[in-house]
Length: 240
Image 1 (cartoon, rainbow, N blue to C red):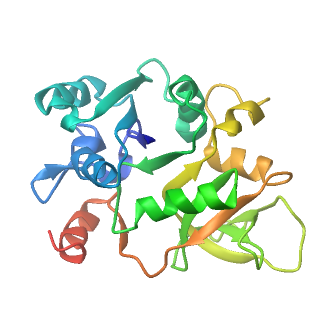
Image 2 (tube, rainbow, N blue to C red; image 1 turned 90 degrees about the horizontal axis):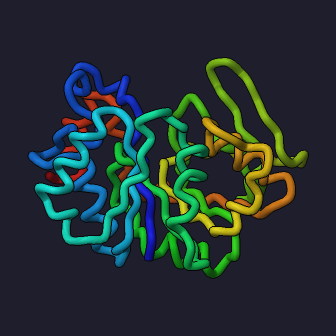
């Protein structure tokens, strides 16, 4: 199975830890974040992984060489010239996903005990264009779903900005956890999306006509380690 790890971000929230390294190399319990994520992917049978790089890209490549790519097949998607955001980064990597099978996307700064195999299986069974791991937790931004957990919109609580893809009677808010399984047919539906763009905007556009589902993983342990204080919290929560 194939997967993509988003590693190209600037890691601004993790400063000063990212002043001299990318967030993928920030240490958690003695190991870089990228190692934690790749080991999780490996444990569920993901053996072909593409990683996008931008900020301190050379250091990511050096680590992969030192670690022998963590004993899996790793491909680099080079965004040194232009940071493409999540949607643009995915589109750039399109040729990697050439086997016609769904693939998993995982943010490098997300640590969880989500069963990635079950998430993948759920997408295969449902036939959804994308299956998003979401939780009923506090956040400043939410995806909105109907009673069938079909994506219908998005809302920013702080700015009160709201984007509705499907008008309905129910808008259930769930926070996105940066882990999703995607059908490769998505690459044929990106017309008008070029260069740098967010996958959130792409999902909201495609939700108007395609089935994009939310998978409630509220019972799982999940932590965004995008801030320094969260690293210590993750060590305690995950028992490292």
